[in-house]
Length: 611
Ligand code: ADP
Image (cartoon, rainbow, N blue to C red):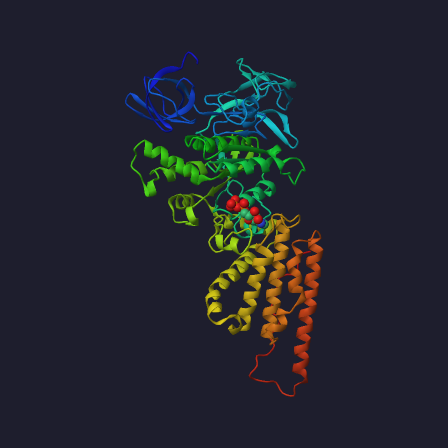
């Protein structure tokens, strides 16, 4: 306890909410409650009484026990050593705690988030005489195999460097001195509820490539964008998150496990450290921070875990990295808000959630963005929040509030899961509001006709959904040939393109170029088949094309491009053969049958494959 700390006492205890008297705190001051010094945060002040949400279990705490106000807000400790750590909601390193006290964390333990003894080799990039301001880069340390941790001037410090060192230092040792005598170290603290300042937000016009066809092609997320992914049990939420962590072109992953069941989080804690970073071959944890806050941990800490996570993400963004933050699940955080709100006897809103649910969620998502930092360096934080609507009902308040905030919605669907269509992203319910701002990137970097082709494919899938009703009534055979072709093309889009096996060595990741190749091959089949149909070729012949079925296997081939080329060649040959037969038959007829449509001139077709 420092001299500035004020001491009061507990007046009332209601679950995670404690009322104290005798302190005179500011909102969101951190306080320590009771003999055991449980950590909490002031969330309401009414006259003499301070209402505190406590981040640890309050059982056994009694009125009359002491309360200490630290006068400081909840902060995260930022510096080298964050990567590959596993923290609880208030940044206590779980691996360190486990070594100290086994599997059960005692209450009131206060362990720093970073290792203060470890020495890091500091390589300066700034030099004496340089003028620096907050976030200016002083140098770097190699934090993990592939990530350089740039050491920045802490907030509120500026001046001219008079001395900067090279060598091995702990995060508490001075690495540089400013002209006013300020000594700079390799770490600082940041109040987690405050977004870290930036110079400018940039347009969301670069995609976060995920290598997942349904996401990149149809519902892309921008770097610095926000997405929600509802995750009913077994719909593939965890697999999708792993895929994003492994394959997305983010440099760093922050995974916040917020209020999920202990065994689910245990899976993540067990699986993540075992995952290999496919890009570097190093453990994925080398560029990951896990924050674990399970459903049996005190509910108030869920909020802390979300803010702690996003603060760490912003910190690495300020160094110029692209971060993907995954929060799993924001619904559990909303439930914590509901519980605290009811303890505070606030007026409940829809389904008991507090009226500020929406503003809290948007405050969080608004911290996403691709930005230019104070140091003029560009970086991004993309936020992907899982939502767990009860029974998959998207009309419930948390899903609805989230939908109003995020720009991308990947709707996982129980029916698709039952059909074993993975990823079970429903292409009719999902959307991305970034499509328009990202189109120029795809046109420039993947293919100039990208936008039209994606629109065409989506139109086919929508038309298929419309035709389904008729098909169920009268059967597909009763449809005109062109619609039967459409149904077949839609099936190919679903099975060859949208379905993607996360567990297959090749199929697990599909580059945008391959996505484009595969899609244009399907479109080529569509265009050729439509031509054949209008030339009077029987649909049954078209359905027998070997190349069509060969296309199904291409996505599993290491030699994807070669195989696809073979399929294209085979397709052109087959089409030629069918056309030849018809022309032969027409020529051998003495007169032209007026009732039959003339063979249509070949329509302009999509460009030839993709060389
Ligand atoms: P949730 O986390 O939503 O409960 P999971 O992510 O554990 O669901 O997925 C459940 C199962 O669905 C997985 O074990 C796997 O068999 C299957 N699955 C989900 N997504 C895919 C995918 N992209 N590829 C292959 N299988 C998948």
